[in-house]
Image (cartoon, rainbow, N blue to C red):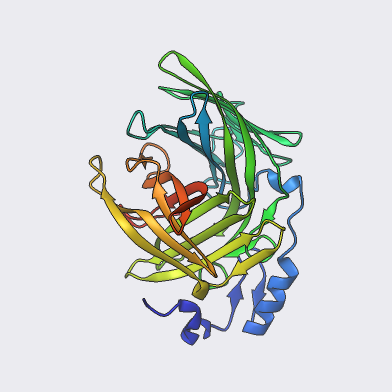
Amino acid sequence: MQAHPRDDRRKWSRRRYLLAGLGVVCNSRSALARAIQAVVGRLRFPRDHGAHPLKLTEWWYITGSLRDDAGRALGMQITFFRNRPRVQEDNPSAFAPKQLLFAHVAVSDPAVGRLQHDQRSARGGFGLAGAAEETTDVRIDDWLLLLDGERYRARIAARTFELALDFTPTQPVLLQGQAGFSRKGPLPGEASYYYSFPHLAVTGTIAANSRVRLVQGEAWLDHEWSDNYLGKAAAGWDWIGINLDDGSALMAFRIRAKHGGEYWASATHRSADGTISTLSPLEVRFQALRRWRSPHSGVDYPVAMRVQAGDLALELQPLMDDQELDSRASTGAIYWEGAVEASTSGKVVGRGYLELTGYAAPLRM
């Protein structure tokens, strides 16, 4: 494994540092550290549940591990993306594309054997698509994700299935990184604002093939926004969000370099008693246990993983292998997004999702 870029002092030889697109310019590394301390902790709720239209990229992302009324395991994913294209921003016309909205939705059902998914895209405005700034309220036509009081509601009518799901927080919000400021690389501008809601209680229905199934389970919500999520040398990421059976939660990711090896890594573990540990790049390891080649795209993915985050080691096995999502009709990427079980010493200890991006081609964000 290559040395982590944070240990390369040449990366710090620049005279000026721009902090995450905030307009904070520092002349030294110590000034950078003080600036980070000044900006962390700025997340304010409920305002930061809403959209941040001045940022280039933003998403609200919910994944869930469910059981239907017959006790069968299912996975689900709902993601709404917002993008600021930075073209014709001074154009007063309502048709100028000042904000673009995208959405992906998927259901993992082993009885079907392949990922069922759909996608939409639209420019913001005209009452057809948009993302509110005051709270979570993001919509594309009749697809919506809404924070209604203390509960999230998702209503999605896809081509081959429909979701009507409610998500209720059972734990406090989990701020990732340094109080919600999450580094994504060795350079100061490579970062996002990032918080999560692990252990969301899920109830609702999934309808498909003229059948409506009652479902319940647990989900994980991520909300991130950034001006520079991936550095130029980065290809994509491996990410997990795992709800552990003892009430604890683990988020971990590694960003892979285009030339091979790791570009950055981080993890946050909240224990059952609420203690939060934020782990550095050197404390996080992803190791492929088994690979699967997609018959649809030909892309090869490490769908079974061993993840080491500090003292916690988990083996992840997918609910099914074929959980590849082709979003070339919307955001343009092909990626693997899958429900997984997490085990320790052969015992299942939790469930969640594994996301694998940049394997088909380096991501452009």
